[in-house]
Structures are given as C-alpha cells and as structure tokens.
Length: 140
Image (cartoon, rainbow, N blue to C red):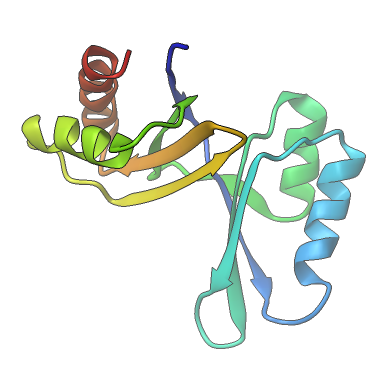
C-alpha cells in the first residue's frame, strides 16, 4: 500500500470555553455537508478555546465556516500523510525531515484499523514542499 502525502488547509477559530460552543460550530458545518476527519479543540486564552479542523470543501462548507467565524489558517503550512501503519513509522518520518534540516511546528498522528494518518506543520510553504519530496523518497 502506498502512502498519500498532500498539502491540507487547516481551518481555525476561537470559541467561548463553555458547553455547546464547539457543538454549535460543528452543527452548522454538518448541515453544509462537512465530513471532518480531524478536529482539535483546546484551551487558548482565559475564557476562550481554539479549534482546528480539516477538511472543508466546496462553496457551501466554506460559507458555513465563515458564518461560524472559522478561517483558513494562512500560517499553518501542513502536510497530511496517510498509509499503512508499521513499526517505526514516526521515527522514519521525523528522520526524513531532520535529514533535510526541517523543523516541525506541530505533529498529530493516529492509527485506526491499520491505517496511519499524520499531520505535519511547517514554518512556511517551502519547508512543506521540501518535506513532501523527502517523504515521497522515504515512504513507499
């Protein structure tokens, strides 16, 4: 099984740190047909939380995102790596990036049903392009 390595747009927003706040955003996106595969919500500043999600596709979903004050993060240069789970995969990925002199700004990874999905964030688009080339050479 081959690995799929591609750029993704992360959508971000702020919400009050209280019950139902995240649910309201997700409700609007759901009604617009969003099928999110990754969501992180975490405390941010006092009384607020930050939410990060992917993917949003098409005009209806983008309108819905804007309606609930989500925006495409212009400073989050992110790659999504999906493929078969295997021992040492995290080390393999991070070694390929380190060998290119790349610094990660963030990493999130999970394995479900034998498939791994890893999100890698970089400082800029050039680093993300370099990482994509390096990972394509290493992951087969």
